[in-house]
Amino acid sequence: MTTLEFQNVSKRYRVRGAAPMLALEGVSFTLHDRETIALVGQSGSGKSTIAKILTQLEIPTSGSVLLDGKPIPRRGKGLRSYRQTLRMVFQDPFASLNPYHSIRYNIERPLRLDNVVPKAETEEEVRRLLDRVQLDVNAVIDRRPHELSGGQRQRVAIARALASRPALLVADEPVSMLDVSIRLGVLNLLSDLQREEGLGLLYITHDLATARHFSDEIMVLHHGRVVEHGPADEVILNPQHEYTRELRAASPDPEKHFASVPGTNEGGAA
Amino acid sequence: MPEPLLSVRDFSVVYDVDPPVEAVKNVTLELQRGEILGLAGESGCGKTTLAYGVQRLLRVPAVITSGSVTFHDSSGTAIDVNSLGAEEMRRFRWNKVSMVFQGAMNALNPVTTIGAQLDDVFLVHRPELSRRERRSACEELLEIVAVGRDRTRSYPHELSGGMRQRVMIAMALALRPQLMVMDEPTTALDVLVQREILRKISQLRHEFGFSVIFITHDLPLLLEISDRIAVMRDGTIIELASAREIWERPQHEYTKTLLASFPRLTGERGVLVR
Image (cartoon, rainbow over all chains, first blue to last red; front, top):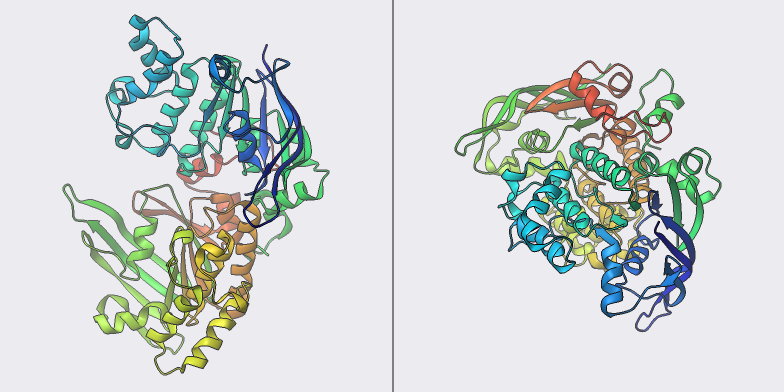
């Protein structure tokens, strides 16, 4: 059982020659393993700041982040073992894999660094991981990232994240750079892995529809504050906060659109 | 009675590489005046090639191998786009057909002001205008797209993504074209900004009466904004019908798959293809 807790976390960025920018204000939530929380909000709402604090790339100005009740070490072995527990899948699969090395090397690194398996079993483990993310192992293992498609690269990035056998996974807009026709495949994969490996998943997105389908809970962030947090269906179908309603109204929804203009076919987003 | 604006007949484009790629195969299409036509399909299906091809914006190795494109001008003359000479083509573009490019975040020149970039359009296409007239035309355009006239001296990096996108729309609108081609105009924007841009496009279309070819792979969005939708696959249009028809009675298997690959915002959960 792994539990990650955000307690009243605030983050203030200093801005030269201007008032400080309050990126997060009193954010609290708990993420358990075997659970998916979607974090939604528009650009600049603080989603990525939360991801950065989770990975300890940024340190909160106030409040605390606890793993199983204990604060996260700032350096050394403790930080390293924390980063083994929580892994991240980044938005841009074109930038997140080392372009100079083969796919094999990209996956081997975390295995070696975190001593996940004995050295002799590394190759086998790399193959297992690539197979786990439904890639054709022999076709990709000796390639370099630029030889793969965006969807394949994102699968490699997921395999790399899984290599350290984390308990928690943070996926920051994992499919927004991918073509629509393959987005669903990658999301389904993430969701299957989450279930089968018992991962805790924080899914950061601005797409309400996928947030609803792929998570247990939805947390809505607006100007650095959590304005709504609840079961996914509840938040989308019966939003309480004005801002959630605004987000929902702005999301394309053909069902509602065609119901509201009966008979005619006047195309009009207004 | 609908009146055609653009007639595309038996249009084919081949990328002359080895082996040759048939990007667009014998497409026939009629665009009505004032209509928003959505072009949907996955990456590589030929939708951008088609939209560029009808304006002859393609470059080598792309070759138009067959077909004709006729533009029915509001003056009543029919223009055969394929037979225009270089100078006529230059005048045709932007005057009659303009374009909002994909990734407008990066389509503006970062080292000059947006006022200067809008001014360029008039300098080239309306040389008879005085400096003052050009200036007021630019300011008017920025007002129309709700960026504001006081922004003429701003550089692109001083504007948000949504504002930059609206500047691109202002530029496309400058010469009051009869057709605007929009290639993924909202893809990089978040939902609230996207909605605002769509409203603006809709409103301007009603105001100025231009037609739009709207290219995107975001089908839910297309269903809301388009009058008719053409679904493309492997270079051909496999289905063309009103947005409602496509939504309620999709004929083609591929259209059904495409529709099913989007999670529904409010409908039943778990209606996804696997």
